[in-house]
Image (tube, rainbow, N blue to C red; front, side):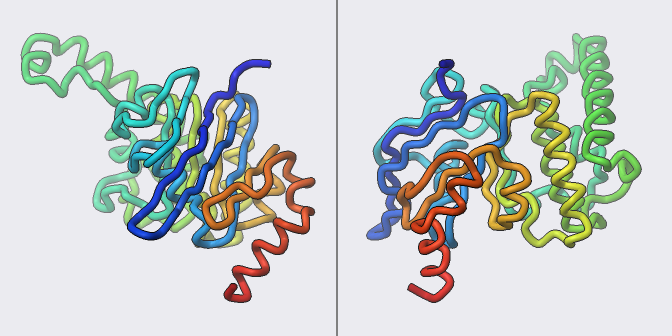
Length: 257
């Protein structure tokens, strides 16, 4: 069996006296959509932050595509092909949808002063390629008709799609989505689910944090469940979501345990 695309080994992370992650080991394999679920405060976002380089683990390792990435900066991790979105939109609101997408490509030739002076042809070719890629992605995420719309005028669901589109601009091997349908109008949820399914059918790999269990059941081939910083279950989605310990974890948090 091929090695996992993403693997964490005994990851621990504390903030003062609070243990957010307590020995978390998980695997994400290529070819599907993996889910990371758990009640509020279980450590999901902290784990995403550790995996994507926005927080360093106190203990443990993170490996991606066969190499260790813990200790690398978020931009270096992204260049290796692991890219994430956030719960809230970070896009410049006054810039158009197209302009936001064109911000995403890394290591642009035109970013250097000398290149801008002496390599105008290379810059134009790269800009043309980025524009072609942006139109391709806008069609995939169903925002091509909004290319000239300011990001601040988009609906909540469209902003989620725009963040996904920006991540896709760098051709990630693994895309981490942080609550892709949270706060989205129910009428738009089907659209977001459809986009993710279509991308997965084209070979895009996903790890998704999501509270909407209907969406998790529809999208995820497998899930890992966190509770109080520890993994309490992992496996096929339908089997895991029927486990008594998983149900108890959710119900206990909702009752204010």
